[in-house]
Figure 1: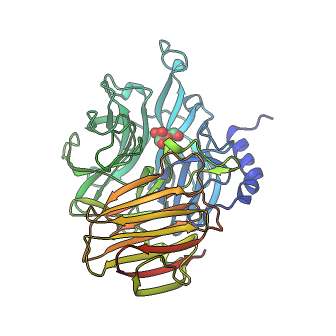
Figure 2: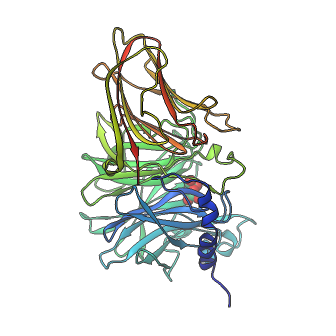
Figure 3: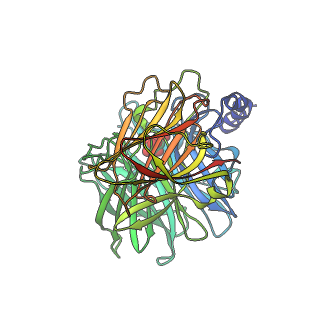
Length: 498
Ligand code: FRU
């Protein structure tokens, strides 16, 4: 009997996950059991639980024909692995089941919308050899098992506006619009001039889709192809999140080549024009891409991203059995026209062994008792004693005599620098990032989340986020502080224990 591609991948994962597990995974950040993972997909709330799928190639730690891996959770901190949900096993997705989204339907089904990548020649005789075609497809399931829709693909190359690329047409995010009583899907496309544009489609039933408009496009302003779009409302505004490729840096923003962009504005009533009020980079770190959001039952808008940059995804330790991790889920809000992101409150229930230090006088190098570890949640406040214009403070994380990852704050320019030059990467050319931060109420506040192979920094209650992976051996778990001028330090540090 011929075993299906899906069953083969599921069996392979089961058989090999023990090997992957021999190498410690992060404790509360999603990773694959074995093999390669990229974008978060289908981040959704279904029948009382949060589901997260991801771009998955179980057979190696390199990107390959994409499957959808699957985990679920009651609180988005402690995750349970589920069988692989999709494999590239149909003519229309033979070259990969690319990114997409998921939603609970009124009939109780969990609907998935994804991009099927196929051989273009199968659909267009004139297509050149090796050309691919990307079309949008549906699958329906019960939270564990998913079946592809017999009428796939549901949005094809015929639905793309004239001149749009059939090779770059991917990553549908769909949602239900109460006001219009229909489903909408926003899909990334490359327009005639090579720049990214977003296409909007609508459907009454998720089976049959119609082109509506091109609400926004990049006009070659920020990057080229816009991958992984998301659209939602927050604090009375409409938000578009997307991940542009080939971005030119602007000052301290957009340095990773492939970047993530948040645009705040308003979509007009005809749904054909997004009036952009502001555009910002989402994360200032070295590793952040392809974020996706969901609306939690209590109204919070929560975002999760792939904590990896494409640019450095080929440099990994030789012996790794799994590769790729997600960020901590972040609650979004808007303040003064900018996106704010903070770790979800569910993390707090796992905080143990909390130690608090108040008004510690910081001068030279200093360690604090029980302030150490690699799976921690730590909030710091640095309050200069005399002159906030003359500050130079460093925090060394994941350190021992050989390794450290440094966060350095300096004024008067008020720049935070993250540096992982000594964080266990042997091929890391790109190792620092700088972030403009502000002094608020005479202090700088930072929340630092560490989970074995990552550091996420949330500055001033989420005004900036900085995410980065590290490969520092776990024994390097010391934390110390250093300041050139006198300042007070307030510290609250907890271990995360699941
Ligand atoms: C973004 C991306 C998506 C695509 C997927 C393929 O990282 O390139 O556009 O669907 O990865 O794995």
